[in-house]
Image (cartoon, rainbow, N blue to C red; front, side, top):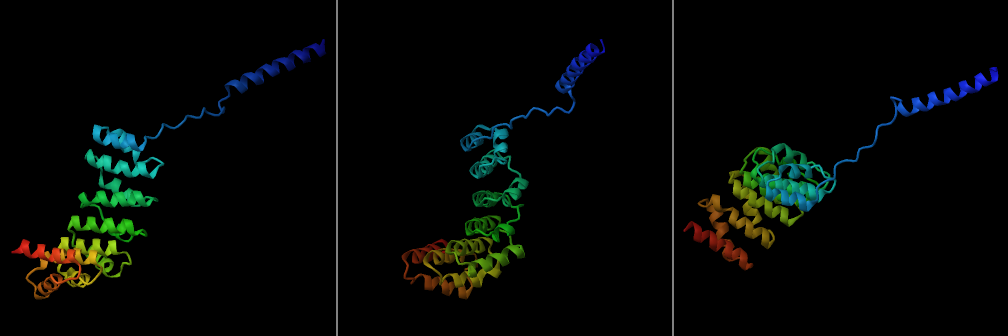
Length: 231
């Protein structure tokens, strides 16, 4: 009889263990799959259809092309905050930083000094252009643009920096712009036009006169256009 009692106890113990295992509080939770990320096309479409939720979701997508597209979509919807741009300017992908620097042209509250010091010249070029759109004469901006216009090894960066200095119109940029009128043809063309705010200065006038005789016809054309505009 004792043996039968032990057998029943063992069977009951097994049932209890099964019941505890089935309903135990420490049972692992079911894994919930993350929501699918929007595609680049969906984000771009959202910018035209007014779907700010999808456009915003694109900022946190794994695909950098989607993140870059999201910046433009949100800007089109007038839902892009300066904070979004500041974060994007520190993105690990160049394409996102470059797009952020470009869109920042219409956000004068965004500080682009960091972008002017980006490791990739493609970002620096666009950041310089946007600084010209800001027309900011902050010391940090002017000093960095002056440095880029003279020392950058990339002609597109020098060209963009010179154009920004002309757009800003700060007197500190005059000598650098004049020097750029002896750079490569594309830079010279941009530099001649950048002299516009400073016409009347004798050295500037002499530089424009020399540009009228430049060996590159597009530089000559830029100088002629400048003379025509100013009468």
